[in-house]
Length: 623
Image 1: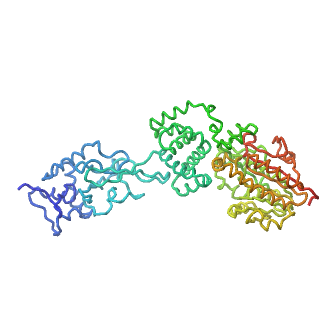
Image 2: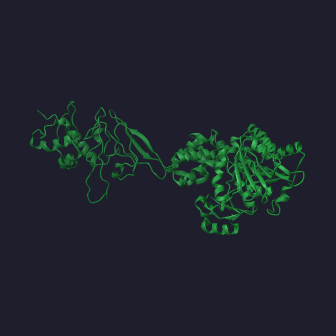
Image 3: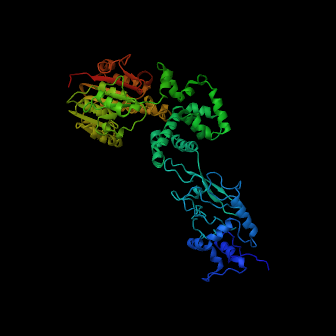
């Protein structure tokens, strides 16, 4: 009777490539049925240990690999497998894939990559195979993960585990620690077999678009500031490298600056809305060459059509990417379109020297030596300011650690000149926030007198404490108020020589740094802020002593938050009179070119954030 081949306990044939099949190929040459000395059933031969396989089946496996194994009833399948191992099959492993390809009879063997060293022992003697029910065969335990790189059913590759795709001369399909790029999953399956998860590496720009889409989904709710959303996302993805973080942030802020125009362009594009926005953001920040490998033909044609669009043909609000209500208010200001264009440009980084500890010229020389790539330059108006390009790591410098240097916009520095603090005075910073202006006021007071830092947010004041510790000031008291009419404010009524009110505002002057503000604010929110500003100014005015100075300031460009607010206050409080801000600033900050009694700073004229300030004096004897 013809040999029908060996079967397991379920009556299924044992594949020739398994451990049992190799023993049969080795011992059936004498025509005798193979026997086992230990008496275990032949059905368990496929589950022998790795050491037994290497000792008993290596020679048979080598001969089988060369096509010299004896054919039995399943010899035709053995011959097909041998031929498949010798000749490359078009359905073998695609680049970057580490899964099974072809049918069970054509499933390729994994081989040792060339140049692996002196001992070229093939560690992958077994193929990863399943029977018709998906049961692992070839020496594997049911439910156990393959030790040759293929995951067991329901399992995935572990990060850091050795990937056998390296043995085939392919790139490893593991997660990159530097970029955190995930490995895309795919399933390849033949009829009657369980799918095997296959993972490959995405192109860096393709993954960058996926990252941007995730950030856009969170930012476009407009529930939280964009910088907070981006920081939260980056903390949740610590594996993203520093360079990738910088590129991601740059693209996010570019899209926020030009969101309305980009959305207008995206209407004619293909793919998801987030992908189209990501393409435009990366195109502006990284260039076309970087994007080219991941663009399809439709996207290339779309970008070519966009090149033919003249920006001047677009409506003003679309051209400069402003909501209609804000565009209407900015357009009526002097050189309104120039102002709108400047608000869409990235801002430099302004630093401020601590007058108590350092001289600007000496510190500027040191910075030019330590960070010449950031081109440190003195600010044109503030006597303490230094402007640098890019985003240097200031926290790592000795100047920052010892309190010689702080981050503060030049416009904010000029507010301290307008307040004009003197030694020994009582001064109140009514909306101190993180303490930037408080630090400069205290330094100009030479740490004498009494300086109160008020704010309704204890969290913001907490961020000011390490800055105060570095500054060396000892005359500052931080107080978290319950509201603007807190009893601690009433106790200081008529006692302060200087009061600064940097009122909460819409932030329309800081759009270079916070472009999401123009999308998060609305006419209704601005009206609500105006009500808050009026209450805060009213409460702060009670603290001003006769002859004392009250300075009201915002980082907004909108008249209803600025001039209109001051005029309404002066009409209600005739005991205060408006001072000439330009005359106060001229001795220390010449060339500002103020046209009236207010301080107005604009990015297109002064290179600072947009600021407004008014100085008022309480009539009466000087305290």
